[in-house]
Amino acid sequence: MRTAIRSPSTGGGALIGGLGKTMLSGVGPDSIAPTFTDGVGVPELLYVAFQGAFAAISAALVVGGVAERARISALLAFAALWFTFAYLPLAHMVWSPNGWLFGHGALDFAGGTVVHINAGIAGLVAARRLGPRLGYGRERLSPHSLPLTLAGAALLWVGWFGFNAGSALEANGTAALAFLNTLVAGAAGVLAWCAIEAARRGHASMLGAASGLVSALVAITPACGTVGVGGALLTGAAGGLAGFWGVGALKHRLRIDDTLDVFGIHGVCGIVGALLTAVFSAPVLGGAMGANYSMVRQLGVQAVGIVATLLLSGLVTAASLALLARVMPLRLEADDEREGLDIATHGESAYAP
Image (cartoon, rainbow, N blue to C red; front, top):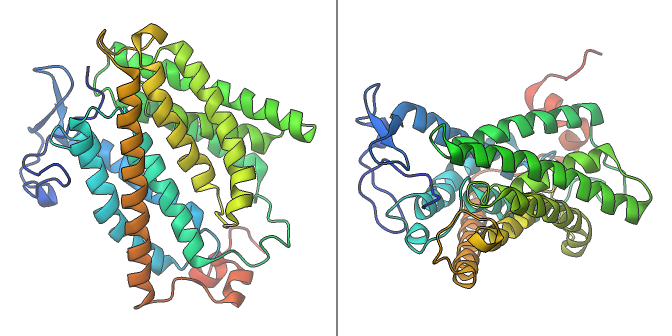
């Protein structure tokens, strides 16, 4: 059983894809993209839209690392460069049958490396390049609205079912497994984060519950189609604990103002999830891989994929920002940052005066 989203594109090598379908050349209402079942396909335009959603959310995650001080023009230019030179090669290497990591058997059912580790390290490098927000470390920089944070997390969970279950490309048992694993892992992450938060700080919080949910969803993403429900439960709990460490102890040690904890949650939990995919995909632990599956070998393959993602995305991010800094300012002026980006950049406010 292979667990990558098949690429319907033609051509390309082990590291980058071909240009045969540039501007969707040859893609129309009648063209079909293959699924994991021989002879079964989905409309290729639908496949394009699905893959486009993955790419869009990946770029949005990177923005979270530099929120509240980056110029919108610089962000848009960076997104184009990062998408072209980091996201696309990784998506090809992991999900295309011609890809380097796919060929070595890397397991990433719905984007643990391609989306979360990729965006996580990019957000961290970008945050380091732009520097901290004004008042960081001296003032309390709280979330704008906890009710909206919780509502957003709930909506995110609903959307995550589409990403994970949809990565089966068919309405079948694998899609159902991915759906249930996403449900179980998310719940386990909430409980794990709240439990450690209560033990360490004396109380659980709504923000912590939302953070634990996202941490667990990140962790289960690469594994959701190949692990059993028990494995999903443990992976989700591990994700909640890893995320708590990532936004606390690790962030304190790095001393980098990653505004929305893109690396602390998406990067760290993506790494944890990629490694646990190798563990819980084993048949002896309820996984769906074949009888000849080797956990030790798979751990090595997953580790190579993690390192490759960190290096490629980190280097592309650093190079892209260095290039852009030569032609445009990356950061707002201090007065505009204090006033707020809505007013300073867009001339509008979220609320009536």
